[in-house]
Length: 240
Image (cartoon, rainbow, N blue to C red; front, side, top):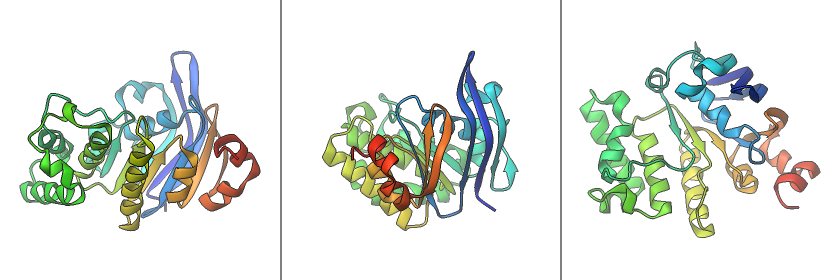
């Protein structure tokens, strides 16, 4: 059984249908990418899976995580099952310190002080720059540092499953390479990841499998290396 199963997912924004029957599977330890153009429904898919409040009443279909139905559960209850969502645009709390932002990520495990302390040490070990800036307001970090903070915050609850939404957004090419190095490192450690990314060539490089979304529907899926060779995918998303 897959860790995440999405079946026939439909989502509306008002009268507009954003997703039209999306079905996705993610196995434990797998990195699965969702690629597509702007407005294809990629971020909406992640929001529906993680229980973003404004979508709860506008969603149809079945979402199963770790054997439990979650399509009607609020975000904090889904997070408690072991899912963490790193949102598009990083969304750090600019006036709070780096460490305060990280500790907010550990909220689902706030009563497990030893676990939280250990997670904080792990994040600082992974991102030494965050340790150096731990007392600095997050709004003073560079874009790349804020992305590290957003990923670190997602890791603070020791999740089984990580949703990454456009981690390269707004970053310079050198920082994009650094962020995808982080994603590749997490994948090598066995972290289960569902990755939404507009830079399709980067996403397909780190993913095991991938889905292509067009106008809210899955139009192709398969092994990442096979999709990277597909002429239609190359022409539409890889600039080839």
